[in-house]
Length: 167
Image (cartoon, rainbow, N blue to C red):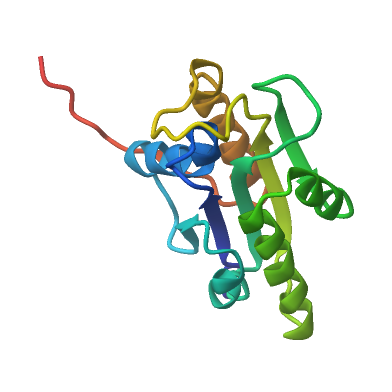
């Protein structure tokens, strides 16, 4: 039996401070963990609709992004089902609207992945900076734990890489 394809998709722009959260989480995840062959990590940047082909290949899609949910900066969210369109539209971010459209087009292809969006309430997505704010940077590790929990739920846990530390 073929394992289901799980895609972890980091999205956002690393040029606008906390908007780059999804990409920064993905980068750290890649350095710390090894994943089963059926799990792929994809830097989606701000490609949105251009990710249609990639997204439609997945059976399960875990999207990592900054999400405005009217909470406090640093609040973590897990969105699925009907909660996704409302929250994405609330952000008014072009790449998130495109992502929603890509998921909608997957319905046309009859290949809609089971989608979960894991997000953080951003503090600043307008300042031109490649650095996350300190509040949001502190949420990288808790977000990684959320991603690992999703992989466990799907039956495909990641393994910590054997990183040799120099003295």
